[in-house]
Length: 301
Image (cartoon, rainbow, N blue to C red):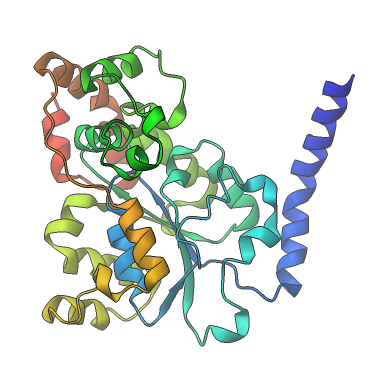
């Protein structure tokens, strides 16, 4: 009986929340975000955040990752909005949050639609295997941010063991499904259905890394902001956003979310299995986004 009552309450709450948030937005002193960077994990979201946070026309949440639309949703809208500036302080700037967990979390897209129905979404994707390896290293390497803070929870499996467990469906922990978290089309599809293609920009990690000016031009066009500042970042070494340009709090977060690069090879048979595993999803990704990524060719038969 208690279980039934709880389900009814949750259903009523889920139905009424959008109306409450819409009402609350009218008298809230805090601004709502204009766009979100949703992921993917280990795909350059912090670097993109760094660029955008140094643009005079943009302002980020006070906390880099609120995780509100994933596991902090129960804390409510007041908790979420306290991370954003007051409306009267914006002076025309656009507001944003960066949280790479939103792409991976299956509930986030629906929650975002309910609270931010007109929000713009930016996703940045990386070669699926490279991303999976980086994700594994985060949880397995003792010198990573996770390893330093949680030495007892380090993943003791080899990378091949971890990948095979995931491919065989044995891994139940969402954020240790290293291979499945690189199924980008599967994760992006709910966002396209909920928010529409015109509100979504998908970027390539390699392009941000090697041709940042072109990538930032896409971002500025998508958001309707001045691209000149991004060009200045590229033209002048003194003006390129860097960890040094962050205040102490931001610098600490930047260091925390950027893990070192590690050299790691996976078994050839496992790699071939992954190539086959990703092929259909990448084909679907091309149709969904209208984009052909440079790394996608090696997954095509």
